[in-house]
Amino acid sequence: MYNYNFKLSARSIILFFLIVTLFTGIQAISQECQNPNVTVRFNNPYYNCETQLYCVDVELLTDTEEQQLSGMNIRFFYNGDVLEFLTMGSFEPGYSSPAPPVIKTGSIENGESFGFNGPLVFFNGQVQMTGPVSSFISTDENNWTKLFNLCFRLKHPNVLGVEDFCPSLIWDLKQNQGVGGYLPGDDGLIITLVNQDSEQKSLPAFENVNHFNWQSENIGDVYGQPVSQNCISEICGYVIPISNWSVFLAIGLMLIISLFIYKKRISG
Image 1: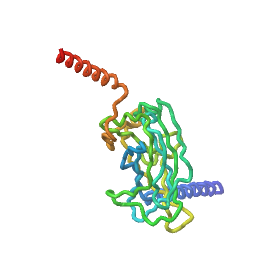
Image 2: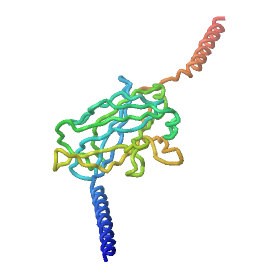
Image 3: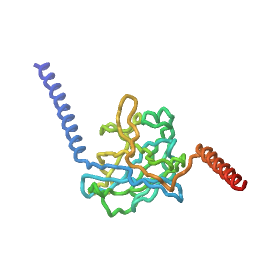
Image 4: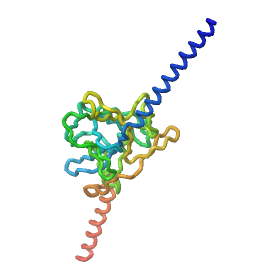
């Protein structure tokens, strides 16, 4: 009789822990489903002919009304053979970056995994609410909320002579939500929102990203490939590549010689 009661007690304990675990899991899933979706994208590429900087805006969109950004880690990749980061700026009122970003340059082999022909550069920065914010993140798909902009130098200015200039910027967040970023042990892009009920705590968001001039594929060791979607055409006029100067010089000499021969015949 004593052994029977002991077995029954053990089963009860196991059943209790199973119920607690199940309840905790359901509660966590329910809370995650209630987290607002926030999508981030790069947009409005432009080139300043005077400063020779290529800039893009960083914009947010949510599916839930009256949401304000609390903080966000800015993590993305780009081709080190095309762009060189210069500044973060034009922050919306109430936001700033508390520290300079950390930028790490990988190998060309790393770049090949993203479809680049140059080294992969990883940008790791952050933006936080540092003052009063009166506006909310937009819920209108036609009117995203601009947070700040990023500006780059062009590694090879002659690329402006091509018909379309479409550099890729890849957010550090895999296509499958909840998986995290592309680096080992990397949580990827993380966004937190203001808790309207408590000034001491922030709320998690469910992050989504729109990559810029890049499409996720996940084929073998390749995560994706560059695509031409947000391009700038014919910036500041055409730049003649240095390799073509010899051709133009030869043509010019031929015209001068032809003109000289023509005049000599006329005078003769």
